[in-house]
Length: 419
Length: 125
Image (cartoon, rainbow over all chains, first blue to last red):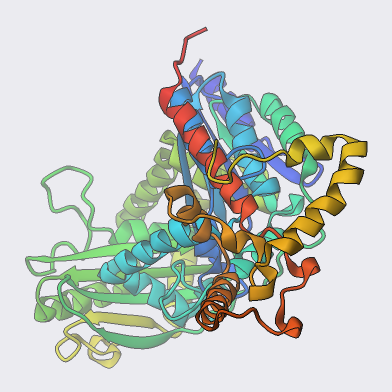
């Protein structure tokens, strides 16, 4: 019975129906609620000017030809649905979660934003701009988020290096947003993902809803990513001292980095224990180290985010983290097996929740790959000590991306850490 | 009765004969009113001391807002001199469009929609 369950899951995971340019993928595990996500290639990577993608994301669920902003919110509240829009560097995701049976309303609601949003000036001034400003301020005041934004801009410069948040210095006008939306909202750039709904039913709804959308030959173009690297320091106070030590590479995701991330992660498998990570044993009290592994469609950024209350503590923790990273090229035997098992579990358990399922589907749906979870786990398993050592050596030999935020006089420089 | 006041215009426009005969009379009357001799447009005469028109005024583009303020300044100056403007400076009938009417109608529609949503009763089918 378990074998049959696993295989049906694998089959439904892999279904990607190509429907006149719009890709549709859905998994139905019998959940009581359904979630539908419209994934559009309108991430910050594709924006023509800084801040446009962030502004477009905040325009979601405002007035369209079919219903006003107030009507959208009130009607979906009456249905008991939850609407959200999120922006990543590659995609704009419009999500609605609702009870089974209400899918026609919510699919129609989200598709009307893609086909007939009004982009009214007064809504831009009164609703969108204040939220954009508030989100940008909150992001710049969170050192971890700010460090990652700076790291991306150092690592990838244009494209993936564009910030997720609008800056107060870049003026975004309503016409910029309208132009970007007109280019990005074409059928070739849209994918629809669903959980708790049957893929045939979702395809039918999407066909009807997106009948009026422009067919995609005005797709957003983007140059392939290159990794550069660099160093920057930012004076700041009021938050934890933060250092980000990163490396990156252009090219498809390497499973060895998932193993490296699992090996270095100080997150213990048993609560209240120190765990087996070489980092958690040696960092001083009051500091924390977190591995960061972000894979995009054609590049990866791997790094360690070190935070603490004092710059000296952060300096020491950063030294420990860098040494552990350098020594992990020699990982073999039982330690490697532990890391492989941890990485496999992380990959598999991410599919427990809706966010994980949608994350996994989104990476595959545009790449048109049919890889199932078994394939992902098998690719992690295939990495032996030699292949692991090669991958880690390759990435640590790239130019490091180093960001220090806090009391910059006391925080370390790259040569002090041996990078 | 809304802030735009009572109007027979929709009824007249709906009938072809009425429209044909009433339109020239309407144009003659708009000229006779004399606001064009002060450089104003018809929507500048709109009573703005109420919340709906204030919201509608907030929806004008910056250029439109500036031009409206400029027209008011010219007209106030006219009033001080107790004289109309020279003929070249009168506003032209083809430029005399209702720039505020659609915004006011949208605001009224939105207020009605909000009232409907606030007071509707929902029944489970």
